[in-house]
Image 1 (cartoon, rainbow, N blue to C red):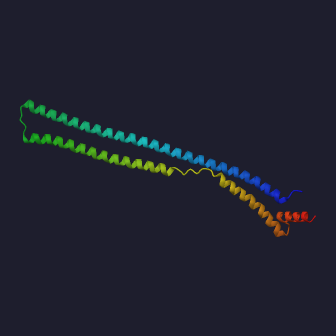
Image 2: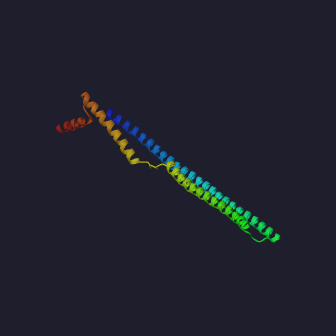
Length: 192
């Protein structure tokens, strides 16, 4: 005759094994999802870095082109002015010098404004890179590897808990526990 406590404990053991395998697979799946999340966060950050770097290169190039065009325009105007003055045989006067100085001052102010705007853009670029890095860190997750030892211990304790719960129920009902039965059998064998 089969001992019901052992049978129930065996069923609990089989159930715990199935539960152990399912939880282990769930932990492996969670680890893979965490790894994929980190890969996506890194890929997103790299794309945003590349986009920001392209944008700042375009801003620098645009600023340089504007500075070049300003210098070119000032040179053309001063060359025309100097050619006009030479054609007329006019000597440089104070007002003519003031006009030339005004061309240089205007060009200098414009280039200074371009440099200031470029500095502002570069500082914003740096802040954007920091934000991208922070964004990657906030999108990344801690990768927790599966812990089969802890799962096994938990499953084994569940089986033991089932067994001892059944034994306690027997004792509460006044029935003989497996331990008492084995002691009774040993004492019975010892007296014969």
